[in-house]
Image (cartoon, rainbow, N blue to C red; front, side, top):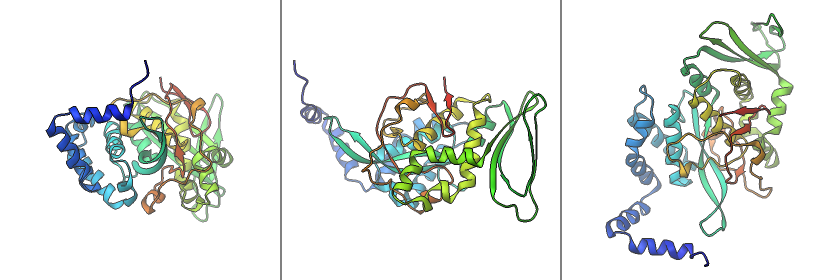
Length: 337
């Protein structure tokens, strides 16, 4: 038996739906983007409140989201469901997006998807980018980390690094001209005593950058100047070394989820926030990074997105299955099982 025509099926669903449901859908569809966002966020307020940690308030998060949509015009051009889903993702992690805290950012992407009939189309969707300060905040919340920090090392600084049986890290920044950045390190103090630290040379960090599909697309479309890897290189380096150190730390599922979203965005993969259902998703596999369309236009951007210290890939993504292990931005796998 042949499969039913999906378009016809959808028409039948509309035809058989209660009149008040149809009228409500038509009313929402007729709203302006700002009104739609406010309405849909209000509809999900109860669900969002349940996701939030005790220290956060749903009213404040929804207000922050509405301000973000208002002050970032490109977000108003995006699929509203993906924006609402992105807010839900932030709620789960307990991170406020697009604020001076620098914890997370809502960024518009051009995403190619297939509709119910199998036809490909471009969709403006919202992705969640987690800043390095957001990763630090999540790491501290795990209860296993007393403190965690990341710093750049410059040519004129005093820096002494020793690995082995008697590990040592001493860094004294130069008081005058520090010179060029030569590396980055992250260090965490553990609750049970002791420290864990990781160092990456500038060459290692730039290798990570050069392997990022977002950076590759920025180079192709000559958008390097506004891409965070160039505009905010130090912040990007800090985040990269924190993510590498995190693989060796006892961290929460919220941190792991944040790393998942950040890895998906950095590799140009669709986060599918329009289908967000309040559940944490395991890390995607690097074997399915999502083929990039060489003829794809760069992602929607504006001044606020370009200024974000998190990775904001000028890229596109395709939907894909999400298995359990992925390549993170530093080029090595981070298991999220």
